[in-house]
Length: 100
Image (tube, rainbow, N blue to C red):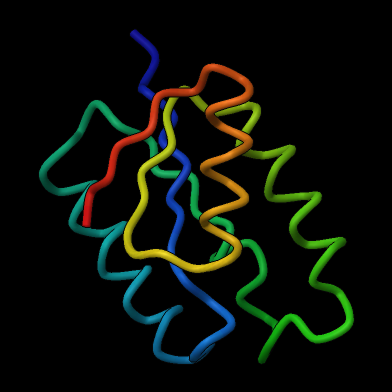
C-alpha cells in the first residue's frame, strides 16, 4: 500500500534558519504519528540555501511542480509562498489541510 504524499508548506523567507528547524521538527512528528504519510518538504530540498534571494521564482516553480505530484497540501502557517501553494492546490483539486 502506498503512502499518502503530503506536501508540507511552511514559511521560509521570514527566518530561513529557524523556519528550517521548525519544518524539520514538523516532518519528524508527522513520521512518528502518521506512518501512512510520506511528508514532502521543499525546505529540505533547498536546505543548502541561506535564503531564496534572486532564485525565489525558480524555487516556487519547483515547489509547485512538486506539489502537483502530491496527494494533499498540509499548511503550517501562512506566508506569500504558502498562499501561492494554496491557490495552486485549489486550482488543481489537491485537498488542503490547515494543520497549524
